[in-house]
Length: 138
Image (cartoon, rainbow, N blue to C red; front, side, top):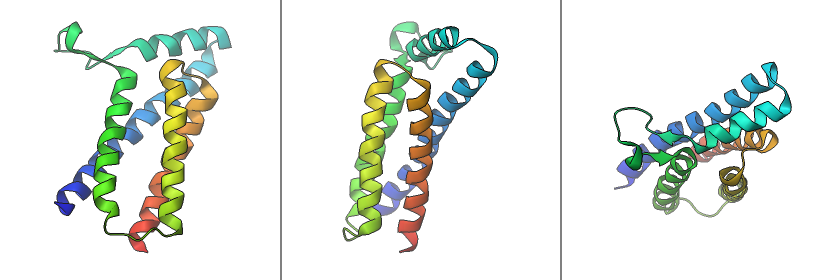
């Protein structure tokens, strides 16, 4: 069970990193070529988009923010399974604090994608991965 949880945790970490990378790339691209108001409008449009965008009837597609929440839900469950193998040390406490901050920022981004929060979420996601890597070595 622990091996399956570790595998799922790694796979969904990649999905989440891809998700936050998508938003970071959108911010950088839109800010480079457009005025802030137009950039904000297009970020709102992207936030309302539905996934998957092909082959699935519209009514069965999920709003894009729900994808991020789905990834987080799987990561939370698999993370709890994996946490049983660690004592609550400094690195684990740091990871949990970063995850809580990430989730709080995600709440705001679900409502309205703000470039500063998008970039903060991207940096936090990368930080969580780094701390997780260190945790695996401890």
